[in-house]
Image (cartoon, rainbow, N blue to C red):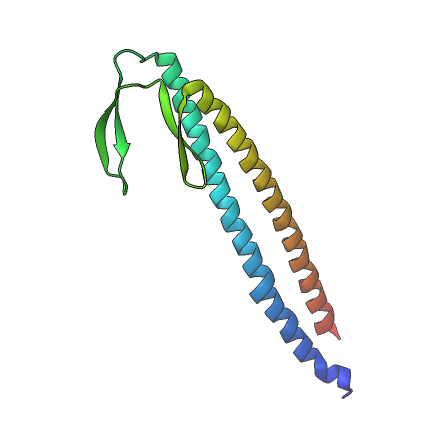
Length: 145
């Protein structure tokens, strides 16, 4: 046996360790971030639909009765005295009181930003998947020898 034949199992082990500990962990983090961003976009879409419904209902004078989720799917009844304004989380834990028109504008901007972030993470996911495939091909080559 030559020295290179002895090192093959060690090289295979190094590649497998790199694949499992680095690349697959990185891919998992990217997918978690993508899931989070997808949820955020869905929530902003839901808020947009709610605002459109509010505009069509024209509830400016008599207020709005609704149920509010206070956590763990527990709801309480509430009345919104002025449904012409809404509080929106604009990021970094900052909430802003906006008119419905301003809220739509802010939501569209935020969704555009989130979608650009999703595109970045999708590219990273594709790159990481390509790296995983290359490592697997390298492992197959090493094990043939």
